[in-house]
Image (cartoon, rainbow, N blue to C red; front, side, top):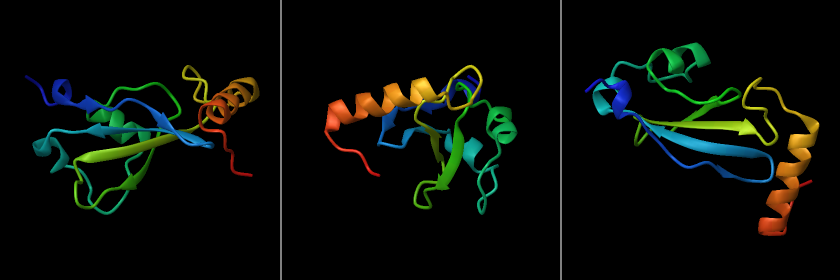
Length: 104
């Protein structure tokens, strides 16, 4: 079984500005990655991470470096990777309805 086939993906979760997900890499694959910087899209796609457009590797969780943390703005079109105003409005409204709060 290849390392890429053992990559695990979380469900998406959100706040009022972004949606998030984490990706769990096999530890032997994670050992080959840079430890002191975030991965570019070309790098994380190059190791076999597969997800729609617009995701950004935004943080390193030092206790568990094999877990990559991703985010993208609410309303991101998964085909283009660009924020679409109508999708953003719908996503923010959904968040507000679900949690009853929005940051300014």
